[in-house]
Image (cartoon, rainbow over all chains, first blue to last red):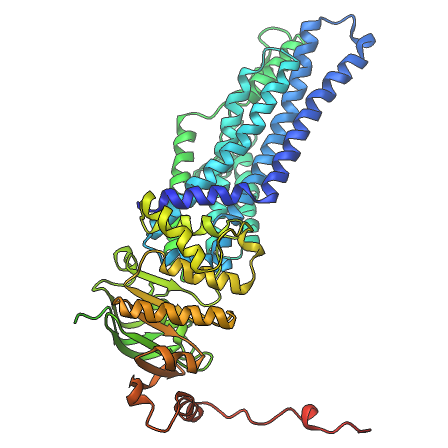
Length: 287
Length: 257
C-alpha cells in the first residue's frame, strides 16, 4: 500500500496542529488535575470530621470518588475527541480541494483510507493516553489500591471511542461533517444506547414478556456493544466493602460485568465494518 | 508515436436529469505536444481533465493514459496535475506539502532533498514558513504548479494555471511549458487566456456545452489574418446567447445630471 505511511504521517502532523484537539487535551488535563487536587484538599480541610475514621479507608474512599468522576469525564472527553477527529481527518481534505491534488498522485484510495484510519486511531490513542497518564500520576495522591482498574477502563474507553470515530469518519466522507456527527450520535449514542439498556434490563428479568426479550436480544446483535472493563465492577465492590455489607448479600448480583470474548469479537467486527465503510466512501468519492 | 493520452467519445453528466457536461469528446495527445483546451465557463473543460487525471468517473467513452485506465496509480505515476483553484492540507507548510506529495510519488530521500528546494525556488516559495491556510490564492496556485512538476511527469495537465498569477508568474509558467515541451513532456493546457494558449500550444480544441466545436493544429483552427479570439468568439457565440444588453440601471442617466 504505497503512500499509506505518508498519508498517516501528514494527517498526524495536521491533527497535532488543530486547535480544537489541543483545547480538548488542555481542558481534559486541567479537569483531571483539578478533580484530584480538589478532592485531596477537601479531605485535608475536613480532617476534623474524619478523624474517627480509618485513614486507609478514607484514602480508598477518596480514590473511589476520584475514579468514579474520572471515568465519566474521560469517557466524555474521549467521545468529543473521537467526534473532532472523525469530522475533520478526511472531510477537510475533500472540502478544501486538497483531495484533488492528493488523488492525482499515484496513491490508491485503499492506501489513502488506511493512512487516514491509522492516523486518526493513533491521534485518539495518544490524546486519551496522555490524559490517562496524567490521571495515573494524580492517583499517586491517594494510593488507595485501585490504580489497577485504570488501565482496563482506559482501554475500554479508547476502544469505544475508536468505533464512533470510524463511523463519523465514514459518514463525513459521504455527507456534510456536522450532519455526519449528528447521524453518528443518534445511531451510536441514542439508538444503540437505548437498545443496550433495554437489553440489559430484559436480561436482568425486568420484562416478563418473552417476545419483547426476544426482539431486544436480536436488536442487541445488530448494534455495536460498548466494551465494559472490570473497573465499574471493581468500584462497586470497593464501595460495598467500604460500607461493610453483610456477607453473602444479594447486592453483588448488580455489579456490572466486564465484556467477554463475544463482545470483544463483536467490537472487532464493527471496527472492520466501519473501516470498510471508510474505504468504500473514499473509493466512490469523485473530487 | 504512441499517444500519451487517448480520449474517445468521452461523456459525463453529474445527475441523471442534467444535460451532458461532456458529450462525445475525442482527442489524442502525443509526447512533446502542447494541447490547449478552450471554452467558455461551463464548457466541460475541467470535467475532461479531471476524468483524465482519474478524479471523476466517465459515464461513457474510453480514456487511456500511458496505455492504462486513468484511475490506476501506474497511470498517475507519470502524470502531473495542477488543478484550478488548488488547495492543500491547510495546517501544513509548503515544504511539507511537497514532501508529502514526494512520498506519494515514491521519490527517495536523495531525490526529495534535491527536488523540493528547487521546486520551491521555482515557485517563489523558498523560505516560506507560513501554513497553507495563510497563503493567498496566487501562492496556492504557484504551489499547485510546483507539486504538479515535482515527479518529473511525462504528462502535465494545467487547469487554468495562470488565473491567479501576476504577469511574472504567467511568464514563468509559459517558460515552463516551453521547456517541458522541448524535453518531450506532453502538456494539456486548459485556459481562458486565449493569447497564452496561442503562444504555447501546438494544437487546440474549442469546447462549448460539453462538445468540441473545432479541433486541430493552431494553423488549422486559426485562419490567416484571424486571431484565436476571433475564432473562439465566432464559434462560441453560435452556441450561447449574446449578453450585449446592459442592465437599465447602468445605462439610465442620473435624474439631476
